[in-house]
Image (cartoon, rainbow, N blue to C red; front, side):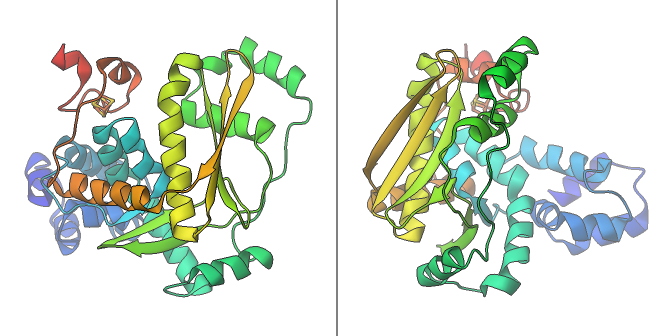
Length: 294
Ligand code: SF4
């Protein structure tokens, strides 16, 4: 795939070609984005990197699969298999960078007990504080400014800061098959892992809940908590729905195996309901896009 990229960029300098080839695969070059940027003397997110990502996403199964995965992206498979694949490819560099940052302080293979100790000593990524206390006033302002149209990721982060329950948390990584899986739960207690999400309305809630449950269940599996606690804020009614249930470790292993097989091309992705593609940022390049299917 690196060669495909280079053949599409006839003007690229021989020194840059040499550097790029040293990474071996497009995914490996993307994975080491800071080294790549440094070696090429360009800024992170520069055209070279974006173009390389574009060609990588256009052929998701024709290159080395990503190795560093985030629980949030794995859980996206409950929304759409293809979206989970795209996100794992696109964001691998973030999880690799987090892993590189954590390894010196956490040790190469920390155990659950190590993470529990770090949590107690508040040595990892710590608790967050509620930043907005006057929710009513802030909410009215945000709704007036088109809050509902915000990117769901940013909207979720803002709503979370308003409504999410506050627990300590820590970023962790564990190995699963040939992958390194990282996560940072919205909260961790001795009993459960907590995940908070927001969605526009009741209809979407039914589809967001399985994603949130899957994510919390992955956290609980890795950190060996017996329960999950999930809350989903519904923007339209300003209601928070809470689910508390036992963690299901075999389900988590099945979800992890599924993403490994999806990324390698061993398992065929199932296309989602076509309406899910309407607002998907991958729609233009996605082979399973609903608008092309209908
Ligand atoms: S365009 Fe549709 S099928 Fe493709 S990733 Fe997005 S939601 Fe999934």
